[in-house]
Length: 127
Ligand SMILES: Cc1cc2nc3c(=O)[nH]c(=O)nc-3n(C[C@H](O)[C@H](O)[C@H](O)COP(=O)(O)O)c2cc1C
View 1 (cartoon, helix red, strand yellow):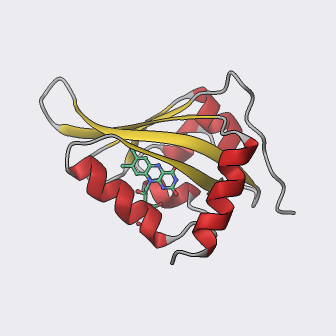
View 2 (cartoon, helix red, strand yellow):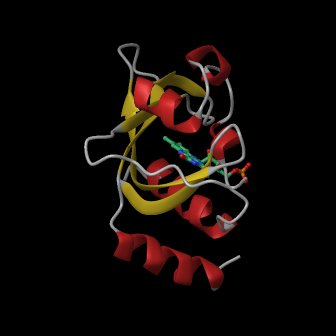
View 3 (cartoon, helix red, strand yellow):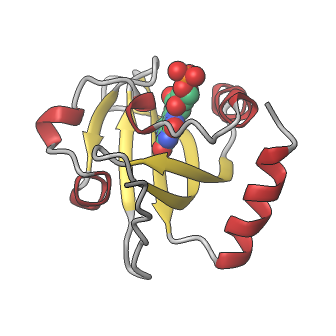
């Protein structure tokens, strides 16, 4: 049941959120890998893809970093709609739309096997 979906080398999963972390844009790779239609994603909190194996501390660090105006990078395990999961090398950063409103953008690519292995070991030690 908990099937891994592996990204291709040319997969690029992109999403944009409002200041609260609600999804306002997701590209087709996001929809294809996570298994949602675009309509199911828009307006939803980004924790819609949160996997239970991810420690809280990782997202606390993400939010602290982007709220501080900086770029966050990390290895993230996300869940798919049908109960599977996929690993990503994620970069998230703050931005502003044309009205000057705060937005957050995340771009995700295929992690290496070593990055996944290191993340599994690290996340075992975190809460
Ligand atoms: C731009 C951006 C992208 C995010 N991408 C993800 C993601 O892919 N997976 C995820 O679980 N959380 C992601 N988050 C963090 C979620 O907003 C949320 O903090 C996290 O899923 C933990 O859920 P919780 O805050 O309800 O505990 C992202 C946040 C931002 C600002």
